[in-house]
Length: 381
Ligand code: SF4
Ligand code: SF4
Image (tube, rainbow, N blue to C red):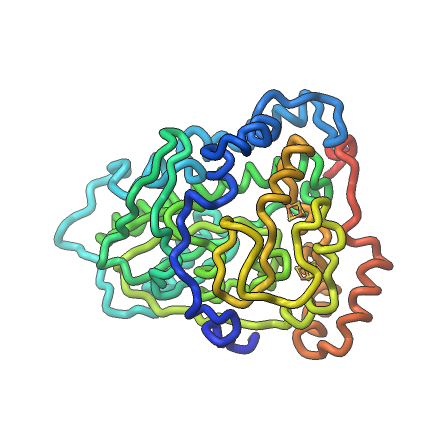
């Protein structure tokens, strides 16, 4: 069992203020004139056979991967839509008798049921925490209608179910080339499906259910509070099971559940010596120095003590690359497939941090984190 993490003390979380979503980089790209050119390079006509390895078939695959998110959920564009609807969306296959109400009196049992249901519907990790309203955006921004909207999560929602979705290890080896973006898009679609069906499950139990993707609230601090992982130098949640190779979604509800606790398993100490994400980031957007309490520009939520990533220079690289990038996930030594060797490595990182430098050397020796060219994608098993 990993040790309990003192979340407030570790990240100076009390210094956090609710973040205004219009300052998030992807929202700024839609509304700030000087960002429009970058946006058109990221989402406009994709030149084939360029340095990101795009071919007709890879580009088609990446577009198809986004189908559920773009068509039926739109969690990156707005909230409370389609699979992320806050209200009853479908009736279900049968009418549930009013007389047989769900008995919510045992929070531990409720948590077990919710976790089993989420995994049945496709989540790879599930954690539960009290809904910390500091992480709800002060205002939302709709990139389809190009306007701000108010966010009012019902007061009775005291709990958050946070789910993590594993992105494909083999596809991620290709980032920042197009196949890396395939597993990103596909997992946006997976999380929409699972979160939408879980939202319905909680509703059919008889409780309020607010399913969200990236919308409505910040995912990473909530996932830390729900015991899913720690924050890495790359600004991403590092899980024990998949490292940073996950996407996150959540559901807010009034169903009482036993909560998980924040955990620590050596990420901080390892990040202090590792710095691979900072070294390999193509835009040098990840700091290689100590943590700070303020970032680079308005896309950072200043206050907490952490490593702040520069979203502006990161997004400029996406524009030059004509594709999203996850190099900071690919090169991270916590990004490994499951296996005995890797479980052992994680054990050493957690228990004997003095060996961290040796662990890093081993990583380099085995060639972990190396780029795999896009054209090799179809040869992957
Ligand atoms: S996504 Fe790519 S460019 Fe952005 S911080 Fe990560 S490695 Fe750097
Ligand atoms: S690459 Fe290294 S420094 Fe960066 S998040 Fe992963 S472990 Fe931390």
